Image: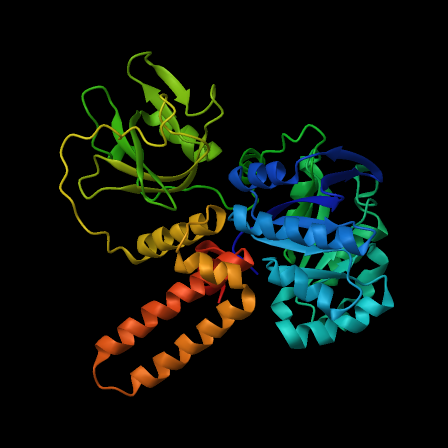
Length: 436
């Protein structure tokens, strides 16, 4: 169990739409990716997507949406809802879900738990309990290989919080996530204070304004340990300028591109920690301003660091849209002086080469070897990849490492052609490696 309680927004997916249920009543949002991005940026610890598809075709469509969401946001995704065989669980996990859940009200799903846990690891298999009556069988699900229980019930409300349903939950003692309305902070607080309740799965409000970071501040004030931004250095230790301000250098957290420089006073710094959105002090207007409040180009905090002299903050952020008021990605686009240099940052080189390959795929160029491979198709690409792998093995027997370097470069190029052919990118690969 983690050191803090998790908040996990939940919504269903059917026919490409986000389907949000509140006590059995369905209402819709037509953009599931907007929901994923919003909650990921606004403090969700994980996101639960319920596959509500009714046909095989729509099931594949939902898998594609889960894959796109896993690629788009940093927040881990839990998925499930339409599992008839082991292959369905594999699809959820291979799409990028951190774990798949199985509805134990279906006996065939109970039978699948052990097979799935043996195949993919118990940490990736959860048991979905559609009512408190299933709490009595938690030990069985755990022995089969489910590492976590998900309790879904609309019976835990303010009127019967001390009922037998609640008593069964308190006495269960197994690691569990519990569904709860986020507009019921008192009930939510009580649930999260139960030691073995690891987090709450939240019903998304119809207005889609459920900001988990702000909800965490309420829970924190009620004594619940949640994951918020905390500082190890107090404001009094910062070295400020004559106006009581500290400069903030802002970077894109993925590319590390410097986006802008702004200033904070103590109030702006506190607001940034509280909301997770970069908030600054405008020297010209002499007032606070939330970056993106007017344009929608918010900056969501990934990390804040203080330099060795305590007089400058480095902020790594997820930038929505351009950072500059001119529409440029970065405020630093006016060239003053430059000397040609060769880019050797490995990740930048890989990405640059991959983008050239993608461009050839989308905009064919006559005489291009890359386009020759795409034209010949998957079998030719795989044949070349196999040949290059063999060349690496042969070259490795040679004491001269230069030959290995040459053959590895050939292999990586052909591997990137395969990535482009299969719709993968470097983020997919590096994320998978990081997960291991």
